[in-house]
Length: 290
Length: 163
Image 1 (cartoon, rainbow over the protein chains, first blue to last red):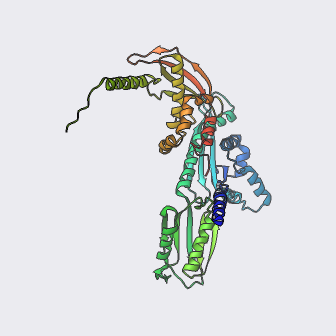
Image 2: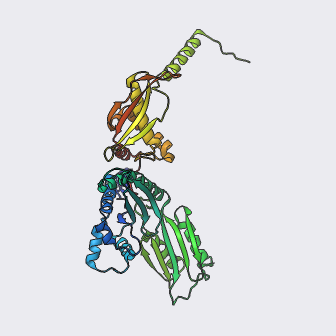
Image 3: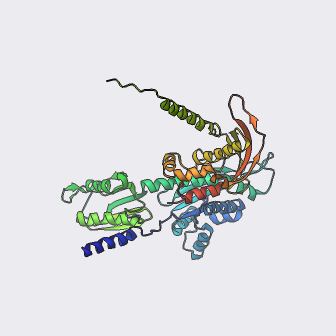
């Protein structure tokens, strides 16, 4: 009896501690970058446009006010230039490389223009947020300063940003809420090694289903809320262009694309008995069956 | 078989008091439901100046009603043209939030909302409104909406930015 009471007390005091373990929720990293047309030099754009510099700072300030720190684009650009590992010929490629190098999950592209006129001067600001890996839009807003008889374009730029930053952040936050509720999207690309003897039509597993169907059943079971979309299946490739995975696992721990990749890897290897390799780049999972 | 309810003096007294109290309850309302709030400007980052019409029988009641209307609009409707175009509490979450945070919201609209008001200026005197039993007053109110949002985030009525 004493042992039973001791056991019950142990469970009562230890178990809740185990369940209430604090987990730091991984937050998306966000970077504010200027809009660049094809062929434009991203450094010259920032150096030559005080409007853009002010707007970038104001947008960052908007994120700070919501308790969110952004990745500093100019610092990343300087670091990238110092490392000189980038392809300097292609300007839009530089932007892409900085996005990739920064590790930002989301980038906010910012475009500002100054409109002088006899009835007053104004600044217009466009903000667009994108998922760095999937390219999915996360929110957009246009802010206008309104017309004023002033040459202080810095002040006009501030006004333009102030007018749109809160609705823009609200729009982004709605997307975040959707991700928390319905999961984040990953892309799964399943292919074969050149030397592989398998194809998508081969019957595999205990049920002897064609590999493509076996995989689809797996996705049906493992995609968050059964939400997945197949872009296409051929005998050599299967592309799942939108597979939802939860943001957190049932115990509240962060669930990353790598965990989902591991789950799929283990299914192919152990349940289907096929050798394979996996690679994860951001939110894209590559599986190569050998 | 048929049992009729006997109207006794005690029952009559009960009925009388029930009616009396129900009308008393209606008379305690501070004004008609309105959303007459219009955005004027944002004097500083995180603040907004709005114009609102408050209704009440006395000046103080009309001011209180006007001020409360501002917060109802910001929290449940959103204010077009302002930095808070969307409601602070999303439409699809409102009934749940009202249910889960009933006590907090009661205390908030009982007077805590005043801690987010930076200034209130009466633009007009309290004037009679034809056909309704209330008088109205026009106010210009400066609201610290950034602090309001933070407070609602802390109290978990509104989700914080991010995941």
